[in-house]
Length: 294
Image 1 (cartoon, rainbow, N blue to C red):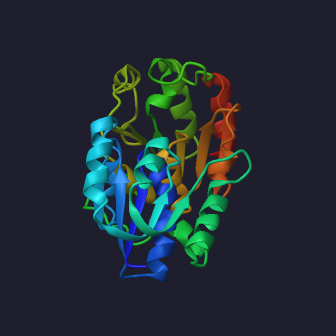
Image 2: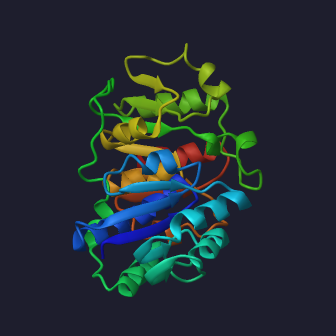
Image 3: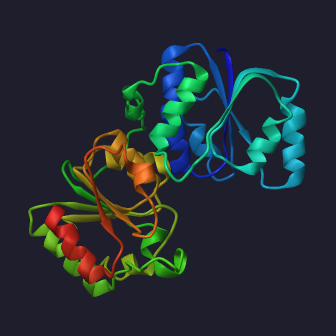
C-alpha cells in the first residue's frame, strides 16, 4: 500500500488510538504515505507526528464536506479508513476512489484494540503489539522541568464541575481539600508538579501562595507536546480520563485515572499498561483512595 487516507475528525485522545493502527501500517509499509482527515480541534497535534504525511482539515459544515470531496475524489487511494465512526466521514468516503475501504465501528462488545485488530485483518496486515508503544521515538524540544522525580497532578476541565458534563459526579476540590491532599502526598516524600492545559482555574490561584515551592510546582497553560514531556518524566500521573491517559499508557508510566462509573471506559482502556482507575466521587473520599495508590 502506497497511499492511505484515514478519517479521525474527533478529539486528540481518539487520534492516539488511530496512531497505533498507523504504526502497524508503517511497520509493514514503511514507504506508505498516510493522510489524515482531521478536525479543527485535533489537526495541529496530529501534524506533529512524523508518521503522518499530510493533514487535511474538515470543518463541521456542509460546504467543507463538499469541498473535501472535490479535493480528494481525483486521487486514488490504496485504502480509505474511517476510524472515527462519524456519519460525515462515511458520507465523504462514499465519493472517493479507493481499492479498499475499512469502516471501524465502535460497538457494545469490542474494545478499541479489538477494533484495530479487525482493521488489520481487513487491510491484510498482521497486528503487532509494539503498536502500543506509539510514543517511542517521540522527540520534544528542551523544556525546564523543576524536579527529577515527581508525581504529576493534571487538572483540566474534567475536575471543574461548571466546565464539564454536569451529569457526572463532581470531583472538584475546595482549596482546603486540595492543599490537604498535596501535603499528604508531600508527606510520602514525593515532589509534585501540577499541570493544566489551556483551562485556567481559580482553584490554583487560591493555593499558589500556600504551597511549598521546594516540593510543589504549578505549570499552567501547557501545550500538548509540553504536557507529553512532563508525563514522560513523571513517576506517577493522576488525572481525569482523557488524551493524557493514553500518553501515560504508551510510555508505561504508572497512572491513576479518574473515570465515571456509568461509562464503559474499559472499551478504551483494556490495553493500558501500569494502569489504575478510580470512580468519580466527591473529592474528600476520592483523595483518600488516590493516596492509597500513591
